[in-house]
Image (cartoon, rainbow, N blue to C red):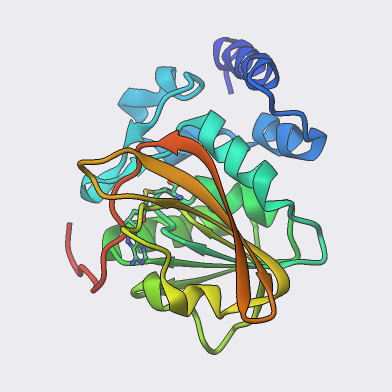
Length: 215
Ligand code: SAH
């Protein structure tokens, strides 16, 4: 990695701290993951700008602040089994995999799913298991999960996902339509009840059902 990108990465970490990201482990993993590896080479110089960037299949890699914020709110430990819905570039998955015990991640676009699998191999992250499918249904065979993170905006919180949380488990999901203000929601399971907290306003691509075989 060239020194120019290293200095941009250090600046990004300072910027995240000044925006209230104070979980040392979250900052550490963001500081060690080369975000340029998850985007097209023509965008490499923008890898450490605090901005969402385009990836294949008309999707986006989230803004680093949002990745850091959602990860911090998820309160992940190395004992946790975590589900991510919306693998996309694989960047958020790598952040989570470095913090948890096992990460399961689902993507509905075949080209993104394949590319992410390659990148997880390259990073030698063998605690990640991938699935090509509709993540709105969760992953019944692997449930229950300590934590669930959805990285696409649902019009509401899918019930099937909520009920795949363990007791005391936490889910982070952006909620809202494409034409309205979306918010990050944190749902915590207490028996069959869920404590809901509304967090930051955000802008995410939509959580959609069905699968897409080509780009
Ligand atoms: N976490 C990703 C963010 C990618 S954008 C990253 O770090 O790059 C959100 C992703 O969610 C897109 O790739 C989109 O195809 C995917 N997605 C949307 N609805 C989905 C669904 N129902 N199941 C699985 N993936 C979904």
